[in-house]
Image (cartoon, rainbow, N blue to C red; front, side, top):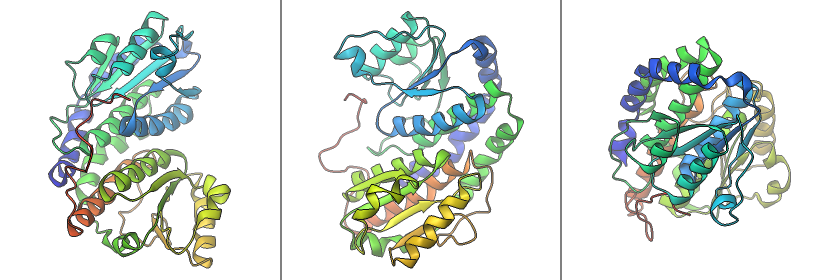
Length: 332
């Protein structure tokens, strides 16, 4: 896991070099006629899909729906997706439910795009267009470089569909920022995690996918019940569950959500809740200077992954082989 986190910058550098291929896909799709976008993915790929949803809705102004593959595989109900943009995200490209959902979407008249690490795979074969992650084989059960690659590939596709120069520039800077993020030390969280009965990971907007991904890794590798949720949701029902034994890891982006995240952070500190905040003038965790809010959530995964991996080893856990898990083919 540690070495694969370190490979993330190189993975993203490859993706940025594939911009001409993404531009060609964007030109062929004809996004202007699409009534909506459907994103399909499971587990960590689903978290990359949450990130992609916010990018598509804010940059392309297309409503996005998260696909429920069981509608096809269990309920056997094809959806009316004519002219819709259907994006499937998969590491292995071999999950039967994702294969079936992609096949059904294409048959229904959707423009189908597969963001995959394994380009020679059934999901890639079913899609009309393929955006490769090219992360190489991932040996750790916990996906890291492929998650970062999936998010960067999705952002690259949106940048071309929207002809967004600012997003293109941010993606060009991303490999160097990922490399620098390897030096960020978030080990101060470890003491609170050792006493925790559960952990909340919160962010808003473009950071929500990363929050859910970090929560998954806390559960998977440190065996801690963890939930990733919107900072807006944390102000409501889940707030009743907060205590001295429920630390919060919160990420703050320099965008329209910043003020509400800052206000929530101040309230939580006043209530003596253990808060670890990344980003902003009052952040407690080491962080780089803010960059584009569309790429900072990707960069924030690196120190979070490293902290989880190092904490696991310090506790005598094997971060590469969590109990009762194996490298999945995304079959659910």
